[in-house]
Image 1: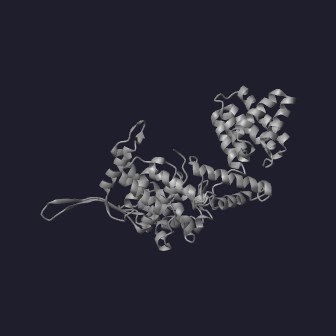
Image 2 (image 1 turned 90 degrees about the horizontal axis):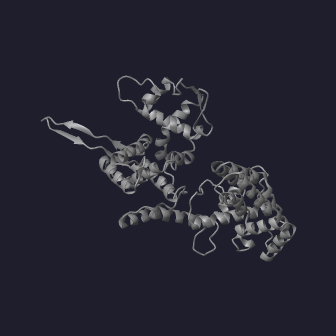
Length: 460
């Protein structure tokens, strides 16, 4: 950290000294200083800001990636190092001369994609980059409140390094950084607005969720009420509610504790397939299934178990992980993992799930065709496209069915398929398919919407 007593006059004297020795270096140092502080003086400087300038802003200035521009970037970094030498800041000078900086700039000199990858890697490894913590993740896109909160956490991490409370050379330093981040987020905002930094960020995200879609005023009011209700995490439902949805995962975890041998195609052995359909009533036909590929529900559970880290494959052997063995005893851990499986991976899927959760939140029984038509109409208004063309209602309906099918298997929704009945007189009636949230589904929907409303944004 730069000496807090250093003034702009001190910096300009250092730049003048560099210019006296080498006019080119002095001129470069003056430009570097202006870039780092925007003319606002030493108080604007931070280690995080310096790293961001070295690894992102400096190479991003030029779209060309060749030796000439790489030489310019290296010269700027060297001039910055010499300036910090004169100012007596060893840490900042070392960052400018570090192998990390050289590697990042070389990657940018090769191509933009390699440069971006190297920048992300360097920033992730930096001890002053605000880390994600158990109950809070930073977004890639954020508003003023979250941007300011990041700055505050960066300053706290840098101060902890200066004070010796955070030593990146020691084991488990990331846990220390996470604690500092959490403590800082829970500090009261200095503006006397009745919030801490964490609640300020969550409120900003919730406001964006309310206003991001062009909806009628009555829907905007409804979204405002929901955001206010779910800005705090809903309580975890009782074990008797969560045990059912987690049951298929627990069954598969128990079955694979000693390890099972997969087929040549990578499927579960047939003996386990037969046990699955008998245990969970996943088969309606007279002849038993030949393979896991015949049982959609089992395929989905198997895939989910792998994605969640319940199972691990080595060669042709599938084994339950140590974490996976805790599904029956640690529902506090596994319940949110199951509910949020796949969240944030596909924006379109998240949009469908959001509308489904909002529709089923009342616990009422809904006509599936009506739900599908309503959701499809809302998605069409939002302008979703497929291959550059507006996505039609049929595609939206198909996507909706694919989206809620997993929730049917977990027991979050009760789907009653329509059937045709013939009366004794020969007349026929058709019962429409209906869908409703189960008690577990209402709890899952509340948690999912809470994360959707207050979670990090990765896109505009």
